[in-house]
Length: 373
Ligand SMILES: Cc1ncc(COP(=O)(O)O)c(C=O)c1O
Image (cartoon, rainbow, N blue to C red; front, top):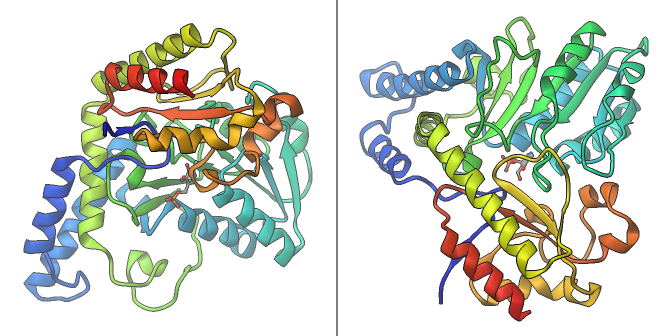
């Protein structure tokens, strides 16, 4: 059976060069980076070279990059530390954030009794930026946590504008760039972002590794206690091969960015055209969307909602309804719930997300199978 993977916002296939790099590091640089002998120093050098590579592509200092196991871990650490170490009393966020942010904030609210304010999401998935000024005028010390590209709809938020407003109002800005890192240029010398989180498996790197950018002069307390790894902020022996794999994946993503972006954007347009031709009242959920994510509301009856992913899966097609963790659950997506009418929410919406490994013939196959449902 043909296998078609169109769920690249959930995770991406690892590039062969990244696998080769990781195997090479596992074979040659197996030392403990904290050991002072040459075997250890060699592993340590792999980590520091990787840190420099990542910093180079993001235009920041290598010391501002802290390796973590995932973006979820980085967000948990940063938001918790902001409350404990910087005396933050208030978080401004949106209801369309990833659960890594939303559930962390919910837990912190219960634990610390802080105030949480939500900027309104419009029906097209964009934020009501006009509200942000008012939300930031509070006297309480505030951190704003908003993502760059929404993982379900692909709607792109104006992080430059958000960052400028945060800094004008003396608020800190934490940005989840999981869906955009490696897929668009991010210049941290220009962007007024204090904390950023990223995850390698979203840009053709390995799973279980990510990083936080923590702007110079912002000193956080350790998330774990133990050794001196990662400035003593994240104790525990580093995963050298995963760090090297992540740096390699980011390097390849940025080196190939222009060609791959153009290719993927064309595929996305082609996909929307083909689906719209086959089902004329198809609507795209969200405007101002990123080039690799297409979220479509299909003009099918609501009875088909539950079965559609199963039917596609039976034909070898991997797509998603909302975010990966919600696939297969009949709970509506919390993101689409903010955007769609009750009537549209119960109809099938599909998130189709592309990479440079996809082809037009895979899209033709998807449309053919959709027609048979
Ligand atoms: C926008 C966004 N934030 C955070 C995460 C969590 O990242 P990780 O898998 O590294 O924990 C994801 C992954 O689905 C995501 O899409």
